Length: 588
Image (cartoon, rainbow, N blue to C red):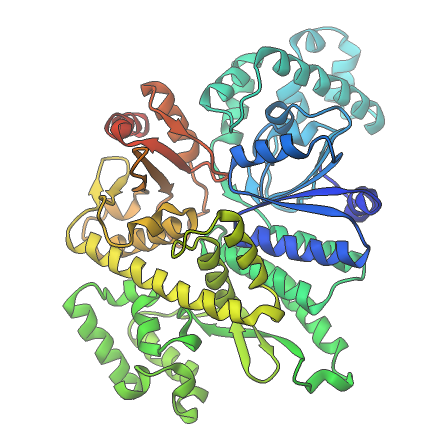
């Protein structure tokens, strides 16, 4: 069920309890975790932090901790599956789920006892009504008075709630009796069985329409920050973490531009409130102070920690607009720099070493020249932070740094070690971790840019009819990097945008993209990702999760649907051809 009073129904419940905190491996979840940790430290709440990279990790973590904990808090995982059926918990176990993944499973929505959803209901959730999904045929047919009351919408809410609880429990018991628990995310067969339990084709259609597309809602870190605000315990650090969590959704293209701008406006009000609160404090200009500011900054990745030239070459926005994988595109970039009146010596050295007169007017000069070259939205609303007088970061800088640390492939360190490093880099007491992450992020962005250029120039992107397809061969430089979900997502988005900018085929410009990359050569597996078409008006809804499940089920392909994002799967290499053929047939 949706929690309406997050303070009363969540925080007041766990404040005197021991809590298991299960956190997904993405930047927004890490930021939500930092805010929640700060609140727990403030009120001395005992908790155990467990990173979970997928459904198998979640199942294992629950099995290991279910005897010690009654309360589980899940950040960016758990909302889009029937969690009780998957984990088979004891009846007194309570799950608090703060998750951006949509759609929310209908059983989670209508379970009043064990599932508590910390999700903003002003998002466009579109949850089907309870009667459309769960009412049994015998209940519909018996008691005309009950039906009349329902039709007339005159039934008291309390009476309806008691009826709802009983029906949900009966449904859960039926599902538990029908299937043994699986240690990973339910397959497409699970959904088929669920549909078959519905009593009419109309109900099956309603559920299919609701679960057909995957998309993302309000940032988990923003939801947790607003809890801190309600508790009047919010700090500038918490606010900065919420900003980073929101920026992560923009960097990885999870939400629409309108949603981003709306949430940025919400954060701007909080930033103004905190800045006003600290105006008169004596330490507002001290060397240890932290200042968050609203910025209308450039869409150039890490440009303040790089040279302007390298940032332009490795940023998706400028690289695709100039088509820098071609000689004509590189020449066009040189002309662009000349139009701005910037000497090559200046743009090719570190940003902090550029002349002050150039840096002071850089945004205005760059925006003026960008308009001439068709880049009318080169500036974006975001936030920056100053730590003392020396360290300044944009929110996107920290997102890239944390993501690079979280998915680091440079050393043989465990996923848990990388998780802790990424978590640490969000704290201002570990700024050396941020700089380390930025260095790793530069290497990642260069690898992505080179891979995109190689794929475009060698025509590796093929039209398969209903979608575009690209496969990174074994032996491709930096291919190990693209076995990680966030790096693969950035590559896939960049690749599709570059293809749309370079192709003359109008139909191909409107197609989605499926990208496959080697995952584990020894095991013979590949990682497959599907993304929706690249369009400014895109609603960011992804249908590939359901399509992948259906294609795997129809061909008996050996797949693992272990990622919290259903549009990412693992597939046996030898099954790739038949899986792809089934996907083409399904979507044609």
